Length: 134
Image 1 (cartoon, helix red, strand yellow):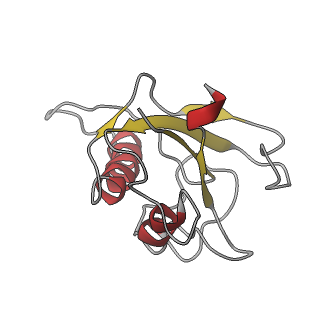
Image 2: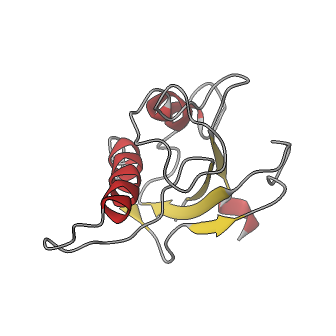
């Protein structure tokens, strides 16, 4: 089963609130997670074993810099679902770019504009294919 990793500076903490929840922070965090999940779900069904993990310090891979960030691994049911021009996450990067989010939660950097940005030097979300690294 193909596996992917999302790294983001946007607070995507999965709080899983119930209907009586009135803590705006928890509701907003879950809303960001839901937005991410729905954007990924445009192309495939999504499964995951663990909710997003919060990290501080250096960002992984070649992203560079230090900031509070969230890492989330997920699986999809079909191979090459995000393949574009030999880039195994090309369509996912396209789909995530510009998805609205709720900023100013527990993230440590300012998110402006209030959306996932997956392209360019202002990127706040990155996608990796980690299928062969498990």
